Length: 556
Image (cartoon, rainbow, N blue to C red):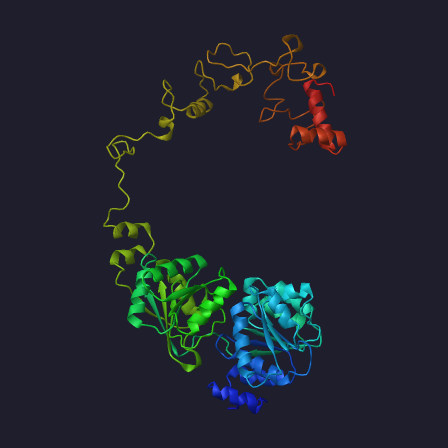
């Protein structure tokens, strides 16, 4: 197996690696370092915890020119925490070299302080896309002379939505640069990005499928959402972790769990995107110094979190996918040390847990909480009948029926159906709709029935006692009407046959005086219709409408 010296790393950095307990390169370092030293573009697929940071940091430090007075390397990261972590790793190698300086550029930091530091001789800049774009617009950072561009955690930048910002930053760099792209997964968008901006890149894939570290023991505890906090406290009391990270799905759940654990006397703190940068740095410093034992965080906030001594990881909420699961439990069991990852899941999370096991081709040991009863277990099966049985058989009440099959209520009284419920006093048993259907079927006409078709337009049907005539439109002699004097209709609705000249809606004739069918006129508000007539944009609809008005007797 090759060592770092055979890969081209100088004795200075090899000795520093040995002081930190690193003597043998990892697979990603073994493949990537020689390619970077040769000046080739690289697309490397490697998951978290494989040592990919050293795979690009070591060759960059070897090729940096300390005498140059411009920025030579730019490392773009998705989060502030990852930018600080990479900066810290670089500073570990620069303890004995004062001629190379590195600067972390990220949001939430004082801009004036960053501007003062940028005016100094800085060789390496590590930053997030948002703050880098801010400096580019201010023209306070010059990327036109860089030699190395590193895109770390590219898939996470895509997930957060920084891909457009990353492309804008790339356009500010020279074409002759060397580009290194590192990502846990290579989706189509990242692959397309590499084709556009990398020159004949060499693809490296350490593992075809992701898998958890062998040193991390995995377990899952079946419980309920309501009992999760209590079960978590029992696990903490049972395992007594030295340092533990607790992952929640949202910032709100992080804050809620933090308040609950703090109220029970636990030394804990929260880490999520709503915290200021100063607060986040203080929380991480306290966690590294073991001043707090429990860190409650979201996935994005803990991206790239690398703290020595983390012994336990608790998934308070189940991860969204296998990649998130790998990232979470990768916070423990690092550098060959042992770790324990416990996932709390409820009935609704069973499918998600099985999906993670299938994707990673693993089997997680499962246990059931003592708070889960047999009735709760039956309830999780999901069918209404099983939920009814879990309540002791007292599920949906049986609906009694009388001799005719009518539904009865609790007191045994017959329930009225919908037609009976809305029947008017004195109305016959059959509804109006039912009466009309009977008339159409048997041709019978009841005296006084309002629903006879002939009564709709007021034809001569006065023998029917219940007939209702349509109100006549006022003529000029009857006073002021709806229309101007010269546009009042010359006849009433009674002069026209309802079935031959009127449509199904009863609002317009189907044919004009020449027997031609009208075009369908698009509905418009009166104001819009008048504007269309004035501007002459109504087209054929205007002609059809005028024919319609002429047919009704209006002067057009």
